[in-house]
Image: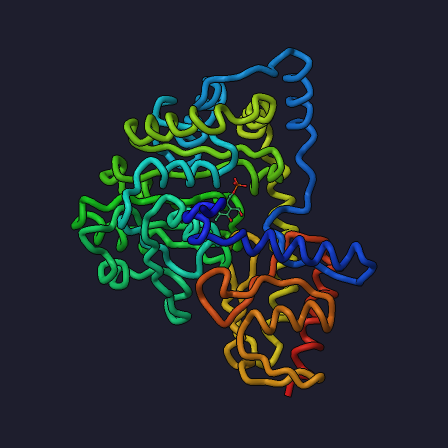
Amino acid sequence: MEFISHRMVRIKPSPTLEISARAAKLKALGNDVIGLAAGEPDFNTPQHIIDAATKAMTEGKTKYTAVEGTVALRRAVAKKFAEENNIHYEPAQIIVGDGAKHVIFNAFFATLNPGDEVIIPAPFWVSYPDMVELAEGTPVIVRSRAEDSLKLTPESLEENITPRTKWVILNSPNNPSGMVYEKQELEALAGVLRRFPHVHILSDDIYEHLVYDGVKFHTLVQVAPDLKERILTVNGVSKTYAMTGWRIGYGAGPHALIEAMTIIQSQSTSNANSIAQEAAVAALEGPQDFLVEWKKVYAERRDKAFEILKAIPGLTCIKPQGAFYIYPSCAALMGKQTPSGDTITSDTDLATYLLEAVGVAVVPGVAFGLSPAFRVSYAMDTDLLLEACHRISQAIQVLR
Ligand SMILES: Cc1ncc(COP(=O)(O)O)c(C=O)c1O
């Protein structure tokens, strides 16, 4: 009898966490490694949020809360949706989990039966397909094209809908491409979705606030309110407020779905951390002005890194408008030889070469379902980022 379950055959560890861990290990051994693989802000959580957590502990807010989150936090989330997105949810239509990841996981567990399909536009955040597999669903990967700015088109959405389609995932701003769906693009997708009432939509808005160049963020419920009962809007405090370690995310959607997700949570993790929930209230309700400065820093880093990467022969980059990633295609480098005589046949080969030759950790595109490419995160110290980009440039220019 095997000890490890059959379920485990279907999934692999998160490749981004794995690569970051590998880079950290090389660094700990004394190697000069610059990690561009992590998906988190390098800023510290703002002080007023930390103070709220301290106060929560002192005041004894250290006990179990309601499984679905405190009333205070769910009210703060409802207020956020109303004020920022003009969407109206009751606290009963909101669940708080241990990060957006947990909320998405619960949604799939609560809804997928074996064989149910989930349309995942590629490039995608690494965890979607594995979560679908864990819940015994079938990921349907829809590769996007550079000429469509790496976005899902209404045509490819429609082509991939079957009677078994349960969910479509939309993620804007996108990890890893940084692409942001425009209002008209969402409207066009909604036009298709209206004709397939059995399909639900998971809108992953975790990078909502990280948009640049005056680009305006839109979420599907906002542009297609008639589809509200079929949409789960997922968001959280991790990326916007530099709170990745606090583990607070939330979802808003139809009451029956939220209720089912709450039951799963009640039998697995219970409530999200009570202190972190208090901190999340402070994040959502407190001052937002620091974000203006952070966004300026992100945009400057993006511009500088983009200039260097774009100029490297063999790479093709589309300028991202959101999140904190750049996703260059490296198709033109396939078949090239490294100075030590190895042939680059995949983006994994290229990522390994960059790590070993010049000590730069990037995530190969295979992890995001659209190869050959790699993801660079620019949520890091500007000087180090630029040094890393120059190293990538040098390493690629010596390929023959
Ligand atoms: C697109 C996307 N969704 C969700 C998450 C998960 O965020 P959280 O830290 O809130 O679980 C991430 C984190 O990398 C992400 O990139």
